Length: 366
Ligand code: NDP
Image (spheres, rainbow, N blue to C red):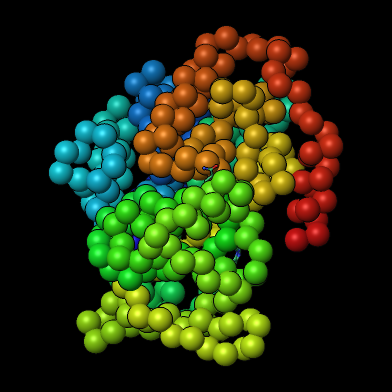
């Protein structure tokens, strides 16, 4: 279950690594060490890439972000990561992944990357945290994606106390309980169908009369006895019960404007994800939703020496174990790239200029 963990950054304060930044003020390129690999992001993809690249003696430098550990830091029980027979707490698992990478010499900067300048010609890439500049021959992008929030009263307060963004993770906690799923796309239908195996009933609440989901997934949900589709309704607010957990949702019928209150124990928000690709927008190819594009089954982006892994590239699976697998692939791709260097830039995937221009326009208009 999700929960807010505001205590996390304190465990690895940014100050612990400030020597790494302070030595490298912007504009002093000639004094800079050129890293072999910099990894940006610290979910299962980033830490697994760190593990593999450190074991390959590439001495990775990980910019793990101020909120290190990714989305699993906001999760309690993880029961679907292989190897943990009795499950594991999300933060504990991330600490283990981090410690394992550190054991082989990974260095960490617990701060957020503010900008990157990715080269096109195989010369060093530049990664910035504020004014401090870091040069590197290769970069692994593993910044993840975040579930979109509704932004209604009670949503944040009741996260981990009934409000969840991951049915795969949390559905089993709502056995025989009344629940809702918010959203009208494939994820909402998939979540509802999965949740219906556990919950007493599932109401899918969608803001428009028409559902965005594909016909087959919509039909599957419709055919499930304990799923009911409610549209067009918006979520007005979530309310808690005496025990502090989610107890009710107040919906507004967008047809007649009337409110309707439903007693629920669980609410699953499935209104899409937003990949954290802002810092590379306009530099690597992304799709229309900002997911970084990679070449085939590799982790190669269209920039030489720049690789991408995890939820940043994956709109479909989004599991800790698939992210870890893709972090491993990125490490192996980076290792092969460094081994074969100097690499002919032509041998890499050519940038799609139309997509780059579209992304640059989007960035300029946002
Ligand atoms: P989508 O963007 O397809 O759907 C998001 C849904 O949430 C839409 O119905 C949208 O409403 C609704 N929504 C968005 N913002 C809000 C808001 N603020 N308040 C209320 N409702 C909101 O995202 P999905 O995650 O469902 O799917 C993403 C992609 O992944 C799709 O391409 C999908 O096909 C794919 N996918 C495929 C699966 C499979 O094949 N097994 C499983 C899951 C996903 P509206 O329609 O009004 O915009």
